[in-house]
Image (cartoon, rainbow, N blue to C red; front, side, top):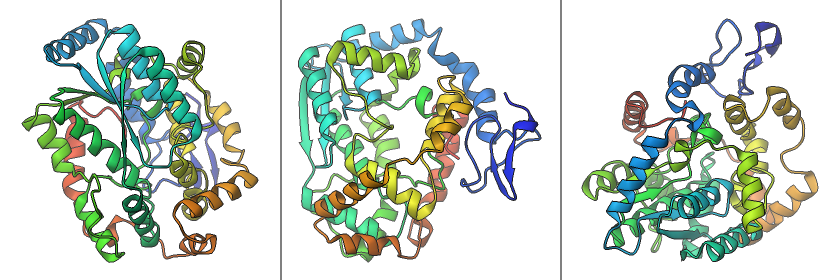
Length: 386
């Protein structure tokens, strides 16, 4: 780890001397060596047990046996949501090719897929011979939901997509009596998760319902809503459906995974994590940096620094370049306005709205935070979410 001499500061602005998290994160703290609390928590609580995915052969074998046993007499052992991005694509490869699992693959189509993501999905399922179900979200309901989020002035603009994805996967697992959901979340690329001050829990239905009521979009027809109680209590304890982060049981190196997928399937790489969605690329590449001054590359790069897949100097160099080139940003802005069926001038007007957060609406933040802290203490949640 770097010494205090490498600690960067300019007046009150500071960057961690070990990763690249900075004071754009409210409440970030640094020790005497300029190292943020996220890094210290990783080295103390997460790395010793995770060990970069090594030494977990027995745990993995036991888990795979349980998954296969749960699928006896059924058409599937498990279910996997496939976006066409790296994490879910590599996990599908492992599940089918390496571990011999019978996987029901579900893709949730919000109408905002990047073309390469669709091609990646098709290439993988065709070569692996897995069954693919494509569940399409009602486009008008999605449009209204997304517009309400923009009009509210909050940061949490990816909630319409995220909520639909997890809700639909849960329902398919319940419908087919599948007891294991394979989730692409992982320590290797996501341990320094998006700061809670930048994003809010997407399953707080008290917050969502209040927001939609205030911006003329409640109720929404046939929208796949879910809530924290359903996801954390009903699904795992009533239906006994477990969500497994399979990538935490193996060494998962981004460059190696990309190389394998390209060679085996003709899989197409892309610029940045989560950019397989047009909306997410617009939000994280343009809207949120410009309106709120946050750069989602910082937690992404910090995760790779902590897991020794990227050096801090390499990350700092990458951060000097724009997330999206200006000409591409203009085209993306035009495309998003078109897909939302509004004029560019209207979309631009949302940029000037007063900035708000979940605090301006009814919410369950205190209850959710208690549950989140408990899961971290118990070792169930292995990401640093503060």
